[in-house]
Image 1: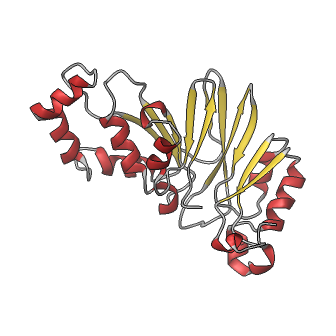
Image 2: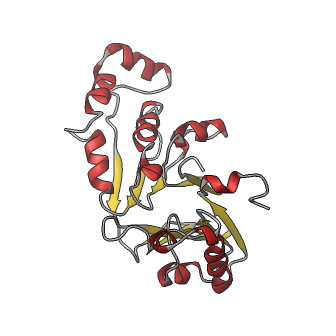
Length: 243
């Protein structure tokens, strides 16, 4: 419930979806290190989905030895703008990484970790994407589709991953909409934001995020084999509520 971040392992590759509060801390807690994550997908840029991005980005770079794969990041606008304003020439953390690249003590730490000087600057391949984008790799394909959440103030995206191991859809924050239903059609797993019991949700709230019954209807209509409810509000924690 504390923000949103999911990691999907496909063989020896790790795909991360969103980077909400404490994502990096929780990642390490379960035995994964930022340097193992090569792909990051943002659903949208509410802070509960992206606020740990600076921490993840800088930890991944700082703990690297210069031999890791380049991090690839996708998301709706302003994904490129945010990344540039974090580590670009005028970014908020430009002073930090420049000091670590240039200071003799930081260089020694980098060498002791296994790196070879000169220490490389942060490098990220980042791309703003829209609904309908398809990202294909050797062993998996990611398809993006628009969700119904906070438009027109912000663009929001759901992702479907298809691989030899099956298919999973991360809807992120969404109300009931046809684009999400099409994306999730016939999926093995549907992970959906489910804020509260349906009877407590009214008006605009029910249009921008699903409740229990709406989530169940989407699962039934798409024929998904497994439904996972996530990103719940605090009402679900009351005794007897989940039951």
